[in-house]
Image (cartoon, rainbow, N blue to C red; front, side, top):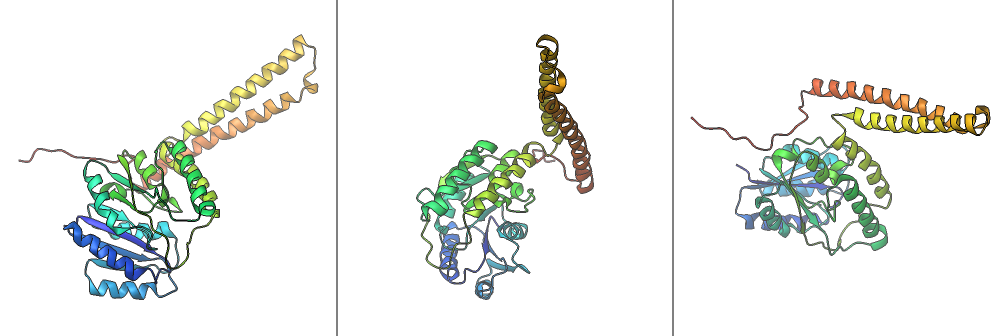
Length: 316
């Protein structure tokens, strides 16, 4: 049985692939375990898949997949994860900046009792203002919102328990939030410093604009993690807060009318109170509609709102 699967999404990294393939093969050899490497070409146009095809033909442990078009890193990872057969799944960038030699340390940490071990590029070799500074800000916000305290959510080099990882539906740009999503499922998470190397070939696919996309995706992750089975708690809570504010403003308006002799028509605050009450009613109905949609979703997909972490049963 395959013990370890390595998933590598590839996009126009033909120059970096030969060195990375050699390093990854050496890293897998050193483990002494049944391993596989799944390379997923995400619509490359520079001949990357030709190099992957040759690699797969030369070594049966390497598999090459090619997506029909450029679908994004999350989709490429999802395709590789679906193909993986190992008990543990490692994700790795194809640009050569992640060091495959760190896989052994990640596996050792995971086997000590963790479901997820996330790499931390403590000594990062990237441009400070365009890459490192926005990344630090995003990591701080993600940690604060999700409650998962990691220094480096953006590091692709991570190891996951396959049974948990395969239960997560990946879409959009959610791959960077996998530790947070798995934390909501009850996974135990650790962090380990990993080697980060300067990019020697090609160019980065990341830009400053991606930071803003991350912040928008974070809202989805927070909702999916904490309110996906009970959306009425979120929308209903907002509705109650707005109703309370509306009632307070209405009471203040009446106080001014009876004690300060200020007519209601002369108090704009009363219009604000009416507006808050109407918006509160809308949020309440949104919560009810969301509840119906969520129940329909789980019923149609037959997907339970829980994850079984372990089973124990006597053997006859």
